[in-house]
Image (cartoon, rainbow, N blue to C red; front, side):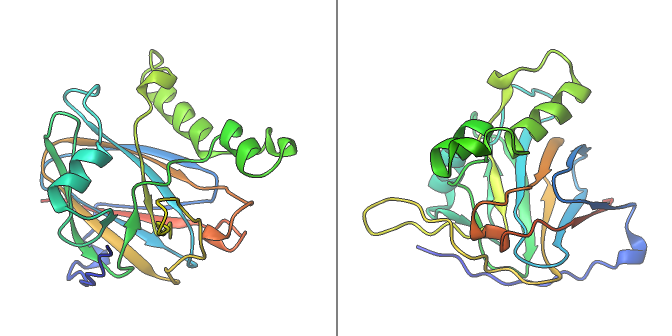
Length: 216
């Protein structure tokens, strides 16, 4: 089942309070206050923005793909999707989306998964799991791998096969496409702008994303 709910935003760039270009392979951590809006822009098209979400007031309560999918009865995310935590708390709501759908099943690349999916010589390659850990350690050096949570892959195309498997296909995004989400509660967002060179999710060419925030 697919969601293709295209909605353009009326927000103006000149009114934003934050605007940052994040190069491929780089990470980002930021806490959104209730009412603030984050836009992630796929600058050159077909880039994957792997993203974690945590309740900023109770960081052990993180994004739950299962609860989110169950609430909306759909495996893809798009305009209108509300991202829920393990406890069922609402974190953010997608309020605009020009891509049409986003993956929440494929997970994030890691050194270990790269060797399983591709080949053993990919072990030292840059990956999202390590980027997440680096950003989280900067925020709180007490974090460990146990604090990693299910992630959303914005702009990534991961169809489910008739037998229940996953395919990592060519992206469905294009230059300038974006997804915009509004914080319902204080939410810590961690992004790894995916450096993946081994699958076609970003046409084997990792590119920048733009991160823009508006206040209430």
